[in-house]
Each structure stands twice: as C-alpha cells, then as structure tokens.
Image (cartoon, rainbow, N blue to C red; front, side, top):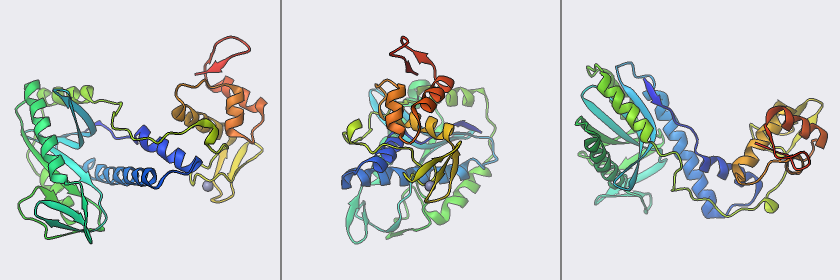
Length: 300
Ligand SMILES: [Zn+2]
C-alpha cells in the first residue's frame, strides 16, 4: 500500500523552465540532466514496487533528519518483520568496481553508492531506535537502468542489478507479512517527519529580465506555441491546448520561478506575450483570488 508518493521536486521543475528560457552553464545543465535522469529511474522503480501484492507499506522519497543530520531514502518498504530501504541508481553505461570505488569507464570516479547507503542506513536505524521501533533493517543499492553494466562486481555487497530487480521484488512479495497498527503508526510517523523543503537545492542565479518570455508547449516546451481562437497550437509537435489552460500553466510557472513577486495583469501579459491584456485579466479574475486594492490588485 502506498503511504507516500513521489513527485518531481521544485528544483527539477525550476531548472527545466530555466533551461528553456535562458542558457544554463554546462555545469548547471549537467546538474539538471542528472536530477531528471535520477527521477526517471526512481519513477521506474516505483512502477514496480507499487505492484507488490504482499502486505506492505511503500514510502517513496523521504528526506528525514536525526540529531540535526539530514538523510534521504529513495524507497522504503515496510514488511511485517523487516524494513527495506533502497537507494535507486539509474546509471547508464559501463562501470568498474575497484578497491571499494566505483568508476565510469574509462576512469571517472563517481560517488560511492555504498558510502551513501551506509550513512543513510545508520541514520535511519538511529531514527527508528529513537522512535522506539526495533525492526530489522536491510538496505540496498538498486541499479535499475537496463543499459547498466558493472565490471568486477563484488559478490558481497548489497547491490541489486538490473537483471535482479524483478527477483528481488518477487522475494519480498513471497515473504509472509501481516501488518499491524504498529507498522501503520511507523509509516504515518515517517511521512509526518518528511522534510519538504530540501536545503540541498542547487539553482543558478536568474532574473526576470534575462528570461525569454512567451507561452510554451506543455509537451515539447517549444515557443512556437501560437494562439488560434480559443486554443494554442504547437507548430513543432501539433499539441493543442485551450488558451486558458496554457495561460494558467504559464502563471504557475511564473509563481514557481518568482515566489516573492506579485502576480498582476501587466506582469502576466508581458510574461505570456501573444495573449491580449483583456483575456489575461479575465483568466486571472476567474482562476485566482484577487488581493490588494482596486488599481493595484494582484492575484494569489
Ligand atoms: Zn510542442
């Protein structure tokens, strides 16, 4: 049973918009692509864990804290006797494991997933003890990209490779498990302790004046997205979307990028382009709550 779902972080969403509206540095772009790729792998793993039919609680994407130290758990599965914590790695390509280090071929050292796993495992154990739960805890690094190969893979490490993911889940599924109110309490407690505002966010500096303005296609992000009557049409992928929905989407994007700025008719008119001020005003009035006085009204 799903107790906590995963959603795309604000960091990925902001970076995606920035990548579309300005030129990111190579480093920022790489950071964005890594995050997006990691998220893709996690969602792929979720699509498998959600099919588990044994009695279990699934908690996806937890950011927790114990004694002032933060740690992240990609996937937590609570069964009657054991808690499984998985760190999902969507690495693609050929890797080598050598003297307790992981390299991408030919020889680029990447962050050791075992170090991360040990750390989060130990912190999770501390937290569980602190909360008064003494379940067995097993932690794994799940490599779930079918295009991943690890040379010199060690036998004695808690790695689950692409060809083993299904068997791993089948094993969980066939483990006898009967959940009680104690398990439910633990799941609820962990969900309530989840920290939503990640302090790990790495965003480049950006400002309104330097961002490209205009409505963008919801499917391919193209700016070739033109108003035709009641709809917007994408010249690149032919996606059709009602103007109202495209403008609302664009306003949400503006609010995400500039959470401290006021949403006014003039600002949104400039931000969306191509849509008349009259139409923008009507959309704002109908879909957002007006605040402030008459002439200076803004929307929330
Ligand atoms: Zn498109």
